[in-house]
Image (cartoon, rainbow, N blue to C red; front, top):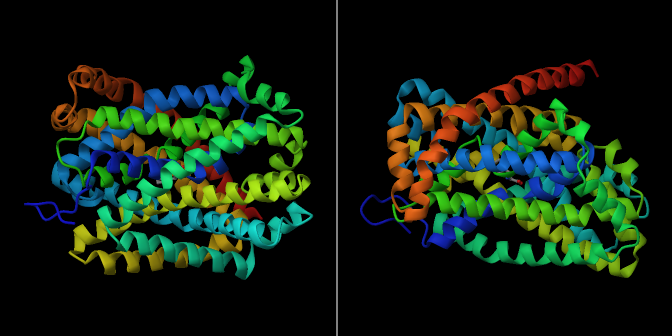
Length: 449
Ligand code: PHE
């Protein structure tokens, strides 16, 4: 498993790295977060901004992480200390904190997903999906499924980069694409699918000007591409210099967008043909889990089969993302304290499992944690990464992006760095400003009751 010479673990193949990075990106963000953000935040206007921001913020920032990670051959805390100096170490710890917090509620949602899948397969869907969501998403049951999902995540991370992470991604990612695409084709046959497509694909001009839609689209781009918490940085630290980084980042970003887009082609027609708009906007975190089961339920036996596949896919996507979240924390502890992979993964995983009990017991706490860690910390981390890669470490990152790149991609490197230097920081700073305000009011709302 160890790379020859350095003793550091490494990916076994170039495709293995791309699939692992795509596995990190594709997850609950694409199927749980994207469709409800889109249906709330302006439909097609949100989708359009999300595409634009994925291109101008997402790909350059992913390259910032790739470049820094491969250069340092260390997890975030050590990487920033080694390349940028001690003053940047707190940013590394902010990444670790983001990973801990995001995984703690991400695993709770993944736990709901697993439960819906199992229930669909063995019991069928409950008659009232809103009531049933209340049962699934609170109390001891939610805690139990969260603990089980964390156990699985820890097991794969203990397995290591090549045997655990790479092997799981190689198997699970292709399976996921096939199933989501099949479900989208099924959704096209629904009566009334057309209205869903219109809302999803036809942007309204006034919604395009709304700053709230911009903030939602930017934060969704960060979350969905796993940016701003050192996950991509950590994966790239297991690379050798033969990987074409700009090409890999582009492939990963388009894959992630493709899955989110196709998930929208599934969810929007379902929402509109079953008139579920009300249920979707009433409960943000529960939207998907309330809306889709009522559709599956209405379809009888066929719905049960489709529903089983859907939740199985969602759980698979969640697992490959959860692995990357835990890997950031585990690898940092391994690098910082010289701990074995096994002990680090079990120790940090146990801590995450413990923190996750709060969001498992209270969906409002879950929503708040998503605002703080899934949005604010990621955006702040993204700003730090852009400044680091395009200003402080520009020469090193440039060299890193050129190494292993084909001539075509080498010609793009200076353009990408220019975007990272001049375009990304101001946009992200503005989004960060709005996110701070939004998060403060969410915190106040939470404690006010
Ligand atoms: N990108 C993952 C998803 O869309 C979630 C994630 C966020 C993973 C941040 C790692 C870091 O589900």
